[in-house]
Length: 318
Image (cartoon, rainbow, N blue to C red):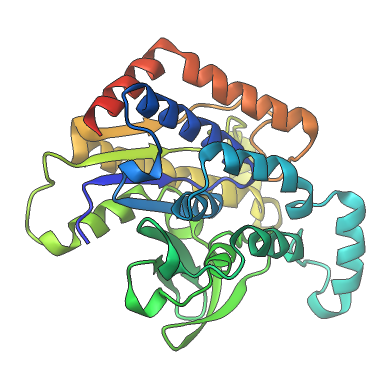
């Protein structure tokens, strides 16, 4: 596979709604330049966690606005409220103990099966690569629609594996290339999978420089803004760090990849990302107020003169 146009999407739970809004902005810019459609303008779609779900949705022909509608419609099924969580936890108490994941994953699986049905990775209309991590072998797993050994893997199952954020959802057990795996969120190795996608694009050109015609579009899901003060960072132990460390790892890896990609690709690299106001950055806040705030923030970012200029430049390159 020769990929010169890459579209990469970060993880971020329900903040994938922000990603969908920004993708819609990219699609609108392409349409204005006479290049309708989004995924048709890219050789490789890459995603981690919620970004994996979006990448696979685009790969089967759904539009960014289709995906945004799915997030709004299914938010409470994926992330049920306190009553549903308590009922689920009560049923899992004797099998998983008091420290079970926040959600049982049944809602997530239901939605993924509804969206992707029996579609396999090999049936993707565009090449797609999504990330996960196997806790048994302690190695990354890169699901690739263009890899013979992965073509028969159900798309919903690869997405379930990529979205299994520790403390939020249980790991997903499945066989990959004849090996039994316990798979967790792709964000644990690359919440921003852009570098992985670039590596895949250059894999067959070992030793060559980064092609001058390489265009990479990296779409974030909004950055955390709640800081951890020095006193807390010095005094917290395993219990206090349990949930915050996930966000720190995800954000830290995303920023480091942005730094690498920006210097590798240069002018052909486009990153859409913005800070979220305090209280909007939770991965599982599906309240109507928060969903509306996420959408409004995403649209405000698209209206910034600098963003609009970058999108016009991108559209001209693709």
